[in-house]
Length: 246
Image (cartoon, one colour):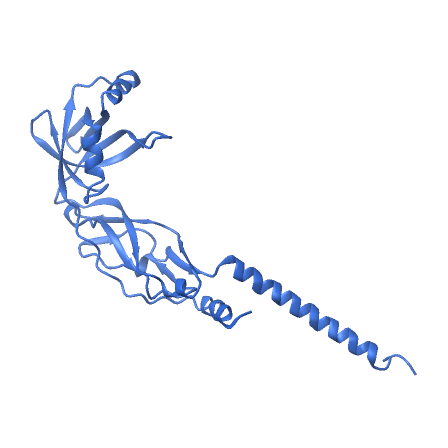
């Protein structure tokens, strides 16, 4: 085995990580989306709406009974794929009346095309904390990758509780200092002022692993070495005197 590969395996045994956390990106933004009420419930009505470029939905929340609505598919796509992201604060304008501050939830998608076929809008308050999944974004080229290791992403998001205006668009983590064998856990993620991570602090997020081919090669070389040593011992007995002879 080469010195480089041997060093790679030795680094993997340490399992220590000390990358400095970075500040998360800016908080989610508020966007506006128009909605129409008065749609009929049922699969037939929903299919007709989709053919017309609309997405059936429902809006509900505290002190608000569920209301069946429909939103423009292109406008919805623009909102959810903007910088605000999936956790955007959406001012839902219902029939040009009073708007309600909401967040998109329970998105249902077409199994083949991936288009949103239905979703819920849940009303929120800017003064009450809410729970959301926030994407984890890795940045930087890991030291371990430069040594021949591989980045193994275990989870791509984390559950966060915060006021709606304090929810980050994503959690940005620099993995440049991670070597082979290092593991970044929930507890290593950057601190977000006014927010709290709800997942187990010991849960792993990403690790730098030794390629399986190198591990297999090390195992094969170890077996060959053991077989060679056994063969040498047998030859020594044959060349020497018989321990049981006279």
